[in-house]
Amino acid sequence: MKVLLADDHALFRAGIASLLQAAGHEVVGEAGDGIEALERTRELHPDLVLMDITMPRCGGLEATRLIKAEMPEVKIVIVTVSQDDADLFEAVKSGAEGYLLKDMSNEEFERTLGGIAEGEAPLSQGLAAKILEEFVRVSRGEGAPGGDRDTLTDREQEVLRLVTEGKTNREIAAALFIAESTVNFHMKNILSKLHLRNRAEAVAYALRSGLVEITLPDA
Image 1 (cartoon, rainbow, N blue to C red):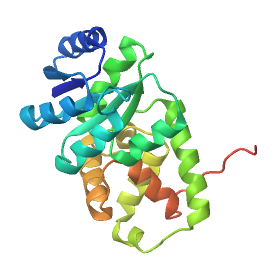
Image 2: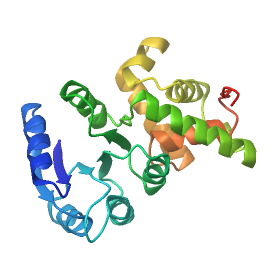
Image 3: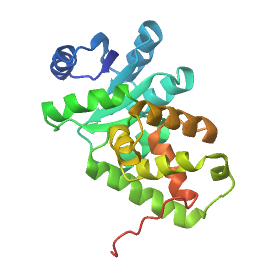
Image 4: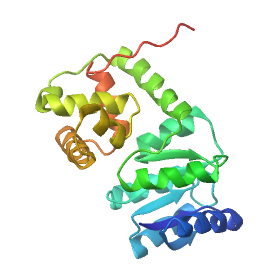
């Protein structure tokens, strides 16, 4: 996997680059701000951009929107110190495939790399729970649109339910007694049929459509 690192701290970029290279990935370039990240992405065509949020000239969220508008095939994962809910939700709305915190362990980071390559959204359990809770609140206000879910097969709906529970493709394959490659195939079909960009949007759809119901604890 070809990776571009976008962060205004050279020492952090060097540390992440070492981890990526040790895991067999190729660091094709680095950027110190959002404008440079856009330019380097145009030039180098990476598979993945690891993007900080707070950078000079142009922040990571704006850079994510610009890159996704021009090159939607490029995966972007936010890597930040920010645990602010607004940053998390804005990153997902901007098109980022995942959101990681810089205080994660080396082992946790290395485990996410394989999932990113498989198209799985890298989110810690706590951050995933925040997204689910927010989507539930939004869905209660909007109601279920209906209609689109009829385009999914029964098996695709099963896969989508398990995605919403936070299961990886490997765990879904084990639960349904099918090959992991088959799960990957179903996920591509789900995103294509529903005109969605990533797993986070698939979770939002499942909640809004009423396909999955989640009960939040009383405040």
